[in-house]
Image (cartoon, rainbow, N blue to C red; front, top):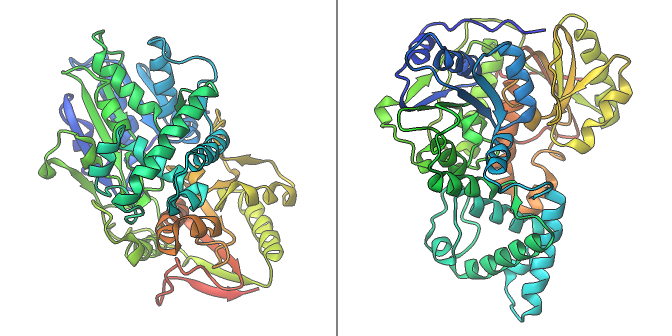
Length: 467
C-alpha cells in the first residue's frame, strides 16, 4: 500500500518548479519536508507533459530509505529510486567494469588492512601510525577514497577538509599511504577491485571518458549530506549538459560524510542561490527544542551550512529521560511501552549498533520490522520498527524510544579507543540528533548509570524520572 505523500506547502512550491537545468542546493532542518519535496521534484522533472521531461534518478544513501521513498511515492513513472551503490554498480556493469563479487565488504577490508600493516612492518618501516587501531587506518583510507586522493603528492598537499580533527601529521602520511597502497594490492589479489568507498572514483572516471548519451536527464539527491565529494561529482557527471542536479541535505544529520561539504564537490551553485528551509513540519516544538539544543553543543562547532529550525506550532509532551537500575530493566520497559503504542501508531526503537538491537524482538509478542539495508517493502499502517540510528535516517515515526543513552554507551567506546574522545563524541552527537528528530510527537530516552554527556540537560528540555 502507498503511503499518502504530503503536498508541498509555502516556499516548497517554489523549489519544486525551479529551472530544470543546472545545479540546485536545498538545505533544510530536520522535518522540513526535504524527502517529500525530493519526490515531488523528481516527478515534476520526469513529467512527460513538459518540455523538460526526461528519465530521472532519485538517489539516496540508505537502502532502507529507498523502500520508504517508494512507499511514499507510489507509481513514479519515469523516476528510478536507487541508493547510490546500486546506481554505481549498475553503471559499471554496463561499462563492463563490474564482475560478480567485485566489492570488498567491511570485514574483508579489515583483514586486508591488517595484512597491509604487517607487510609494511616486514619491509622494515617503523612508525607510530602502524600501531594505531586498525579502525583508525580504515577510516583514513575511506577519507582518501571519498576525496578522490590517489597519489602521495595529493595526500601530502591535502588539507583536513572532512575530518573532525587533524588526525595525521604530514610526516606520517607517507607511511599511511604506503599501507594504503599495500591494502589495495592485497585487496586486488583477493579478487576485489573495489571497496564501497572507492567505487565512486571509478564511476567518475568512467563518466569522464564515456561519450555515450546519458541514461538520466535529471538527478535528485536525498540525504545528500552523507554523500562524499567523489559521489557527488560522479552524479553531476551522470547528466547531460541540459540536465539538472538537485541536492537536498541537512548538515546537522551528517553521519557519514564527517564534515564534508557539498561545496568541496564542485557543484555550480552560488551561495545566494542556495535554498534554506527552516520550518519544521514533523516534530512537536518540545522535540524540536531538544534537537536544536543538541545542534548547538560544542560538538557541532565547525560544521558548515547548518540551518537552525523555527519552532513548530505543534504541541506535545516534553521528551522523557528515564533512569533505570540496569539495562535489562530498560529493555523490558521499552519493549512493553513500544508494543503498546504500536497498536495505534508507528513506533521505532533505535540503537547505537547492531549488536544490541537484537534484544528487542525477544521481548515483544508482535511482529517488529527491522530497519536494515535489505528491506524492500515498507509496511503500511501502525506498527513496531527497530534498528540502528544509521538505519533510521530520513524516516519518521509517531513515537521513538532511544534506550541505552548512557555515558557507558555514548560516545561509542570502540570509537573512543580508535579516534579519541572528542572525535567520537562529534560523530555520535549527530547520530543522537538523527534519532531524536525521527519522532513526530513522543520521544523517550532511557539510561542506567549516568546519562550520556552528549545530551543537553538545560531547563525545560527533558522530563526526567526514575523507575
